Length: 448
Ligand SMILES: *[C@@H]1O[C@H](CO)[C@@H](O)[C@H](O)[C@H]1NC(C)=O
Ligand SMILES: *[C@@H]1O[C@H](CO)[C@@H](O)[C@H](O)[C@H]1NC(C)=O
Ligand SMILES: *[C@@H]1O[C@H](CO)[C@@H](O)[C@H](O)[C@H]1NC(C)=O
Ligand SMILES: *[C@@H]1O[C@H](CO)[C@@H](O)[C@H](O)[C@H]1NC(C)=O
Ligand SMILES: *[C@@H]1O[C@H](CO)[C@@H](O)[C@H](O)[C@H]1NC(C)=O
Ligand SMILES: *[C@@H]1O[C@H](CO)[C@@H](O)[C@H](O)[C@H]1NC(C)=O
Image (cartoon, rainbow, N blue to C red; front, side, top):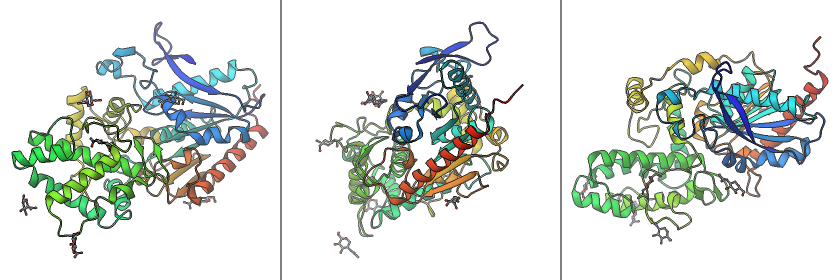
């Protein structure tokens, strides 16, 4: 479906655009059956819809209607069509606050126009940035949603809230536990790359080992190459699922273990042997299906995600400090430098980030006055670093899934699911039922 939304306010005459949303009402018990709303994040909503099997699996039990709403500026919900990303003037309406307002207006409209939906309690569900939006949606619009599931939502990955190095520390722990010397050898690989790439023949050898589409030529190329590898290890940690899956890329079961099979060298390994192993490991991520003819350093994840839009959001509101020191993590040391980041944003988009804005507008760590939010987190997921990992109150609940990667609980159930994720899903449904019961007992419509 498409829905007319206001760009900023509806006071301007031509200030609307079409928002895409998907509806599944096969199991909906009307009148009054609940609505499960997936609050779309930075990508194509059909892709999130396909990767959120949890909602499809509980719809019947809850008698729920499913609604998947696309986030403005992603997928097909482009306010200015092909021009949406053309410059900072067109991008100016890409904010999380506006996205939340869009979801609120959409839901109010559905309730007003869909027969039987007027008294339906709505539960927000989302993962990652969508999980952050889900939590914030309940905080900002408690009149619209009775509760929220925020899966793998790093609502505290903002300046001054958590240590900037924890994210990469968790990535490193995943590799350390997935194979002999795995983290140690990745830590060694950066110097090996510097060493091998110092000669022209070394550069050529490296390009050939990694089957790069575009051979490495310059010093800047090596910096990008190392950045691309680092991103590869991060993505692998995020999608370290216990079964074969295709989220960011098609991958085998426990992909980090598979990758680590190529990195189990002892200390006598030469730079060339080591980097050969690293190339084999990278190809697990980029060529599991055997269909890639070369590795493209411009592509590290599915094109269903809106990389450019997210980069813009990080350059405005979503300032997430990250750093490495090479000791507690396996990466080259790099400090968090807000000024450098801000200058990059200025060069790329003509905008400067506001470091403290997310904390101001969404409450930072001071959220105990809110209610009915579940924060679920996976122990293998680097985004755990910025997540809510303890129970704040009786109704601001944290659920830990120690064997889980990035929002495993939102995915379809699988025979290989660890008991912790089965328990998490069961508890989540229990809370949903409780919120629905509460809402049905005390209808919010008792106005005169
Ligand atoms: C989602 O699944 C449908 C049905 O299998 C498929 O046609 C569509 O291409 C998928 N969308 C994405 C973005 O993967
Ligand atoms: C650099 O590589 C050469 C061989 O190419 C090797 O002899 C040397 O030990 C390496 N140096 C370091 C610091 O790894
Ligand atoms: C290190 O690995 C090499 C080759 O796999 C092997 O020959 C050597 O014995 C190993 N050394 C140690 C100390 O394990
Ligand atoms: C990907 O795997 C296939 C099948 O093993 C192989 O033929 C191809 O060369 C690989 N591609 C790269 C870039 O290594
Ligand atoms: C690499 O990926 C980028 C971005 O998708 C694309 O524009 C480019 O054509 C690709 N290069 C090769 C050689 O496939
Ligand atoms: C929070 O409370 C719930 C319900 O009592 C419990 O299942 C869960 O383990 C608690 N979470 C943490 C992180 O202690």
